[in-house]
Image 1 (tube, rainbow, N blue to C red):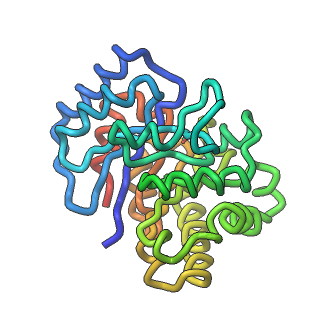
Image 2: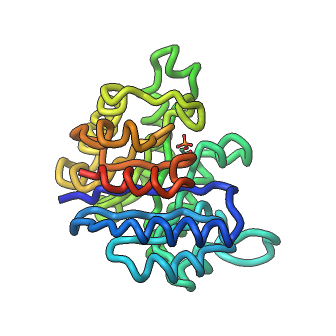
Image 3: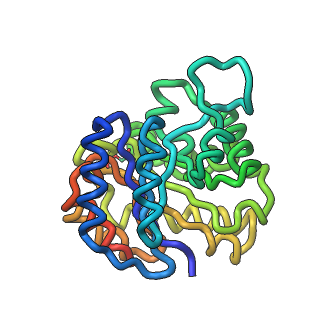
Amino acid sequence: MRKQIAAANWKMNLTMEQGEKLMDEIIAGDIALKEHQLAVFAVPFPYLINVKNKTDNVNNFYTAAQNCASEKAGAFTGEVSVEMIKSIGINYVVIGHSERREYYNETNELLAKKVNLALDANVQPIFCCGEPLQIREANTQNAHIEKQLEESLYHLSAEAMNGFVIAYEPIWAIGTGLTASSAQAQEMHAHIRTVLANKYGEDVANSISILYGGSVKAANSAEIFSQQDVDGGLVGGASLVAAEFINIIKSLS
Ligand code: PGA
């Protein structure tokens, strides 16, 4: 059974004290996750160790980095390598969030390098894809997503793609309060899985967790996560509120 994942993306929010309080409140929610269900917390670099110390005590809770450098090591002041992340015991990294693509000019080619470094270090990427509003309005979102997958992931072997994690986040739904309808999410997730099946075969495609992101909240998560090809969510705003995120985790199917 493929993994169902509720992933929090704190982005550049919260002080360490606020973050620890949030984690304590979520952990106090006493969520019993099934074997195939995970909660992953993508937090700012300075908080990774403290948050990991908390998630280590909870069954199926994990900590993730929000980004990593596109080079292995060396004279890159201010960057954080995937090996550094791994060396403190972190096993997940978000790669290619639309905010990184838009504000830091991260291209599909650059993201391919990050994906390779992560896999080499045995860190699982949570690879983000998604289309802007004008692409959705022109109804060319399928081709847009295919190109993102092709240029950043298609060089990978079927073995590397087995159990991979992808997040589909339509940019027009991120932080806007506009959510894709569950039917729109299912349609794109099914398309992504078909494209992956054509490239890697049905078994590999069925092992890949495809998360939905974009204004997921407790009020819509159960409906979205119940869709056949939606395997959980990548959650920004609502992951900063304990009661919201507890209910989002609980709505994993
Ligand atoms: P949002 O962000 O839930 O605030 O829309 C999602 C994301 O950017 O990952």
